[in-house]
Image 1 (spheres, rainbow, N blue to C red):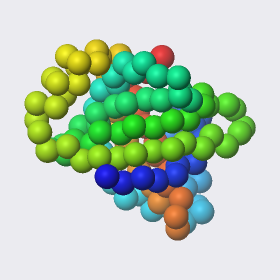
Image 2 (cartoon, helix red, strand yellow):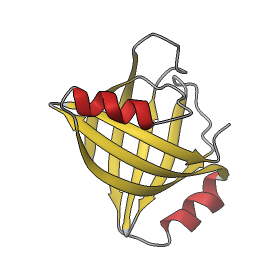
Image 3 (tube, rainbow, N blue to C red):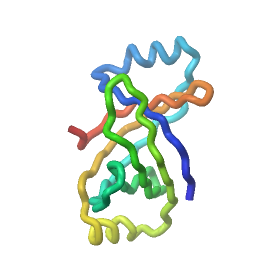
Length: 128
């Protein structure tokens, strides 16, 4: 299990072309393009807006639990994140049956890096 503190800023962008130009200009490098599918599950708790999802990326599955407030524009949004690799292919069915499936998000993630900063350009399906 891996714990990490994550600081995220999220913005809607209808066209990644100018973003790629800026990333290249500042010296960021495109690292990888990932196809991800996130399954979000129902949670009943009094904690700060917790989320539980199972991310499937290729043959890898990762259970992700995180607590964070809803995103606010132009404000840092810290999150407590716990990652747990899953080997059991039946785990998705187990979680769906026990907790109930809340949403499925399919995304193509283009990941760029500059020093210790990661830029994700996500093309999502299933997000309103």
